[in-house]
Amino acid sequence: MSAHEVPAEGATQPGDGSGPSGNGTEPILRVEGISKRFGAVVALRGVDLQLNAGEVLGLVGDNGAGKSTLVKIICGFHQPDSGRIFLEGRQVHFRSVEDARHHGIDTVYQDLALVPQLPIYYNLFLGRELTFGGPLRLLSQHRMRRLSERYLDDIQVSIPDINAEVETLSGGQRQAVAVARATRSQVKVLLLDEPLAAMGAKESSLIIDLIKGLAARGQAMIVIDHNYTHMFELCDRLNIIEQGVVSLDTKVADTSIEELTSYMVSQYRKQVTTGREELSEAGR
Amino acid sequence: MAEPATLVTGGPPAGPEPVPPPAGRAPRRLPIRRIVERREAAIFVVAVGLFLYFALSTTAFVGYNNFVTLTQFLAPIAVIGAGEAVLLTAGEVDLSAGTAFIFFPFVFYYLTTNEGLPVAAAIIIALVTAALFGMLNGMLTTLLELPSFVTTLGSLFALDGIMEITSNGTQFNLVIPGAGGSILGLYSWSEVLWALGLVVVVYLILHRSRFGIHVVASGGNLVGAAEAGVKTTRVKIWAFVLCSTISALIGIVDASRLSLLDPGNDGTTEMFYAIAAAVIGGTALTGGRGTIVGAAIGSVVLGILYDGMYIKGVNAYWFQFILGAAILAAMVLNVQLRRAAVRHWRSLRR
Ligand SMILES: Nc1ncnc2c1ncn2[C@@H]1O[C@H](COP(=O)(O)OP(=O)(O)OP(=O)(O)O)[C@@H](O)[C@H]1O
Ligand SMILES: [Mg+2]
Image (cartoon, rainbow over all chains, first blue to last red; front, side, top):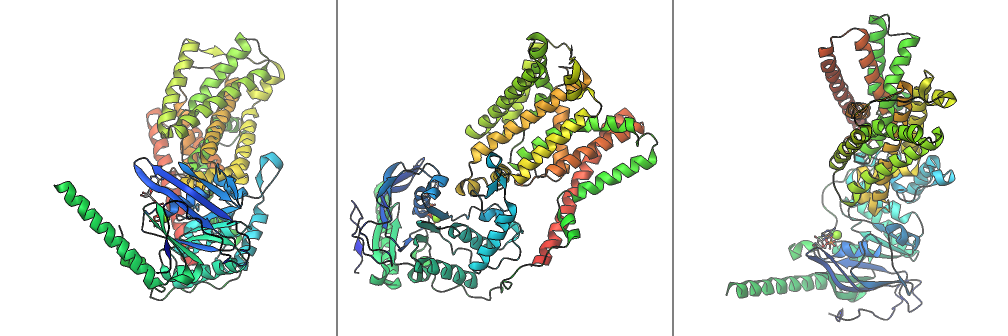
C-alpha cells in the first residue's frame, strides 16, 4: 500500500498542488490536534488534517467515528476542547456558524438543517435572509423567491414549486435543497456531510455532477460519504477517521477501493481481537 | 459497530427511480386554491357562520352598542392571543401572559397615583418592567433548558403573589384625566383600535420580518435552525419579551377603560382564551406553525360565541359547557379541514 500511516504528531504534508489552483504551499484549511468530548463520550482525540486549495478531500470512517463532529467544529457549530484551526494560514476562532460563514465556510449538515414547515425559498436563505427596512429587517420575499428559482434552474434541480413547504418534498429533493443552500454563494471551503445519503441513483448523479462542477472551478471541499464508489469518483484525497483520529491519509490516485476495503477490514479485525483480549483479561 | 463489508456499497442502489418532473416553472396557483390553502380559511368560515347564526336568531346581536361590547371583550384576547401565537410558533408557551395583563396595570397605577409620574412615563416604565419579566421567562426557559410550561407557570404564581402583596388584596379605581384617558381606553373604540394596531405589528413581526422566520425555524427544527446560523436562544427570549410586553400594554388599556384594578382576577381566564384563540386559528401547539390572522379570527370567534350566548340568555351553568364544547368543535374542525386540504394538495403535487 503506497498510502502512508499518519504519524501521531502532525499530519501535515507538503502541499501537493493536486488542485487546479493549488500552487502555493499553504493549505486553504488546516486543523491541528482537534479534540472534543461530549460528557463521557470522547468524539475526537487530536485530529490533524489539511485541505489544499482546489482540492476535494474525502472523510471516511465507521458510524460514530467523529466525522460529523469534526465538520461541526470546522463550521463553528461546536467549539473544540483543544486544537487549532488555520484558514489560509491564519489561525481562526469561530464563535458561531455565522462567524464561520463570514470567513467563507459553508456546510451541508448530515441532518440537512432544513425547517420542514417553511417553503423552499425560505430554507434556501435560512440564516442569511435578504432584508430591507434597516433595523426592522423586513424580508425581501420576492427577491428571495426569484433568486431561489433562478439558482435551482441554474444547477438543474427540478423542484415542483418554490413555495412548497419542505415537508412535502421527498428525501432526495430535501437533500438537493440543502446542497443548493450551501453552494449558492461563493465560499472558500465547502463542507458536505453525507450529501448523497437518502438519494436515488438519478438524484445522486445530479448532486455528484454538481460537486464535480464546483471542483472543476477550483472549489475546495471536504466530503463525507460511506460509499467508496462515490468517494473515489469525487475526491482527490481520502482521510480515514477511526475513533476520533485520522488514521490514514492517501491520495485517491495511489490506492483503490479494494485496498481501502481490506485496510478497513483488517482494522476491524484488530479491534475485534483487542476487544476480545480486553474481555478475557477482564474475565480473569 | 457496522460490519466493515457494508462500508462498501458499490454502485447505485438497484430498482427503478421515480422520474423527477421536468425542469420548468410550476403553473401559477389558482386564487381560489390560495385562499383555501391558507390555514385561516376554516376558522374564517366558522366565524362567519357563527356571526350569521346570532345575527339571524337574535335581534340584539347586530347593533352599535353590542359591537362595542363585543370588541371590548375580544380585544385583550386578540392581543394576548397574537403573543401566544408567536410563542407557540417558537415551540414555547407563556402561561403568565394573562397575569401580566392584570399585573402591569397595577405597576402603572402605583407609578401614576402613588409616585405622581406622568402617564406616558408610567406606561414606558411599566412596559420596560413587563419586557424584563418576559426576558426572565425566556432566560429561565432557554438557559436552564426547562419547559416553558413549567417556568411560566411558576412566574404566573409569583406575579400573582406580588400583586396580592402590594395591593393588599384591595381593588383600586384607576382614573386617568384628559386626553390620556380617551387615548388609553375611555373612548368606546380605543381598546379595539389599540388591539388592531398591536395585532398588525405582531403580524408584521411574525410573517414579514427576519425575526419571524427565525421564530418559525426555532420552533420547527431547533437544532437545524441553529446549524443554519439562527440564534435560537436569543430568538426565543425575544419572543417571550414580545408576549409579556403587548399583554401588559393591552392590560393597561383595558384597565383604563374599566377604570378598575381587581387583584381578585389572576388573569388565567384571559390566558386560556388567548391560547384557545391562537390554536383554533390554526397555530400548532407543537411549534413551527403559527398565524396571527388566525389568532385574531380565533378571538373573534370566541367573542361572538361569548357575546351571542349571553344575548340569547343561555343559562349560566350551561354557558361554560357550551363555550367549551364549541371551542373543542372549532379546533377539531380546523385540524380536520387542514389535514384534508394538505392530503388533497399533496396528492395533486405527486
Ligand atoms: N451533541 C452530541 N452530544 C453527545 N454526543 C455526541 C454529540 N454529537 C456526537 N456525539 C457522539 O460523538 C461520537 C461521534 O459522532 P459523529 O456524529 O461525529 O460520528 P460520525 O462519524 O459522523 O458518524 P456517522 O457516520 O454515523 O454519521 C458518537 O459517539 C456520538 O454519539
Ligand atoms: Mg455523521
